[in-house]
Amino acid sequence: MLEIKNLSKTFNARTVNEKRAIIDLSLNVNDGDFITVIGGNGAGKSTLLNLIAGTFFPDTGNIILGGEDISQQKEYKRAAKIGRVFQDPMTGTCGDLTIEENLSIAKRRGKRRTLKLGLTNAERSEYAELLKSLNLGLENRLSSKVGLLSGGQRQALTLLMATLVKPELLLLDEHTAALDPKTANRVLTLTEEVVKRDNLTTLMITHNMKDAIRYGNRLIMMSEGKIILDVKDEAKANLTVNDLLAIFEKETGMEMANDRILLS
Image 1 (cartoon, rainbow, N blue to C red):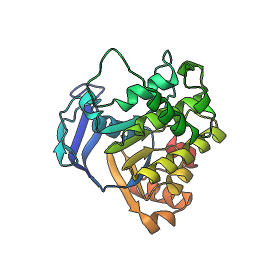
Image 2 (cartoon, one colour; image 1 turned 45 degrees about the horizontal axis):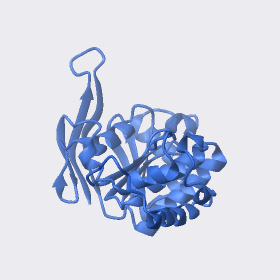
Image 3 (tube, one colour; image 1 turned 90 degrees about the horizontal axis):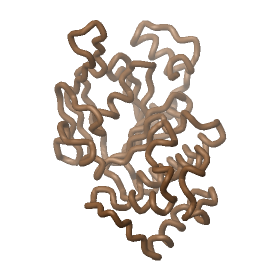
């Protein structure tokens, strides 16, 4: 379970560029929740994920994961418990290493690392089987450099790496935004399959309200560093894009011409 209590984060405090990114935000995430997170530019979506991951430390408040307060824990220590996939397909993998080498590093997440990866035949067989599930032909390219893969292939591999050792929490930061629609749909389908298979507790930022409604069991809308909507299960499934636009306009007083303005 993830508990966020009265979390706040301000950048460039007491300057003309001061930005209150997260304001006294509290959130309880139950084990197995798959939460989609939407909101406009500057809403605080990515800042929230960065605070959870340890990229930033909060000014005030607590982040508790699995009963442990990780609020001031360094990012590399949290990486043993948190899997993450970024928007940029180039982030999260090493292009100069092979597919099997990247997977080997991911498998050792949270363990003491040595200079030698020590790949075994059993591991190679395991990786080939896992890659086969992606249906991208990567199981036959274990020795290929990751830098040679397409954006979609690389993002699918990153997703596999982030979940190879089951994380306590999976963070997806607009992980399909840089992909073409067909590839994005494939990666989202893979995401849903992996999350359901391993019952992963997941937070997924998306710029697409249709995807926010379609995927997951719970939806959060953010604005100006606060959560303005938290809906789940049947109530979420019954939402429409127009419903979300109407809620956003009511809560913020801002009019939206379409869903792309809200989520771009």
